[in-house]
Length: 194
Image (cartoon, rainbow, N blue to C red; front, side, top):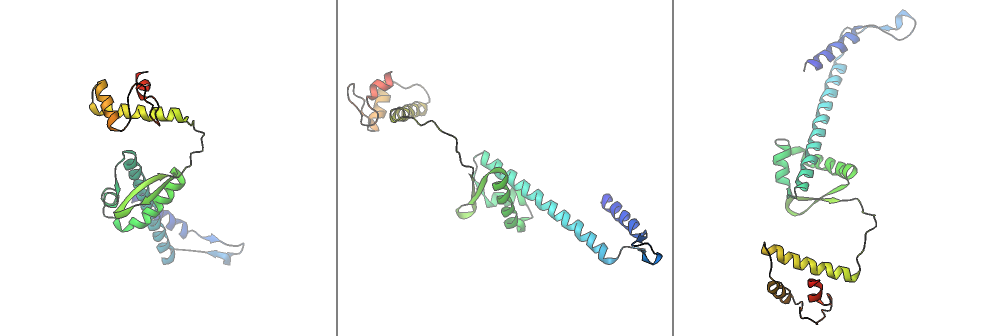
């Protein structure tokens, strides 16, 4: 507040100084006090600056909150946003969300999508153009089988006996006989025992 008063005092001091507009004495203009229009103009500018600064802070808080929720893989809902970010400034929700959407897209490369019933989701807009290693059909089928076996072992939270594993695979329709070939995985027993 004191900086605003000192700014106002400096402005009044400057306005009380004569302004020379030309070389003649009749071109000198004196202002004893700031006019009402310049006073209201300075108040409007400071109010607009404060409002703009508050809006920017609100948008930044909203973006940080959205990124934090997304990073923690938590549900982003309108009620959580209003409660934790806006507080008593909920009337600015639509404008602030639009500003946040624009900044998320231009700065972070995320698209904020509104889902049903006031839920939101962040989606990466940046296309991944890096070349990927494509596994062969054989490697792909082996990775799927490995994934199934490891899932079963982790679900048991301990070790898994061979009989339990064969029973699990048989229940999935994957035959585990010695010489029998599965149409997708090939010789399952040989792959697992290797």
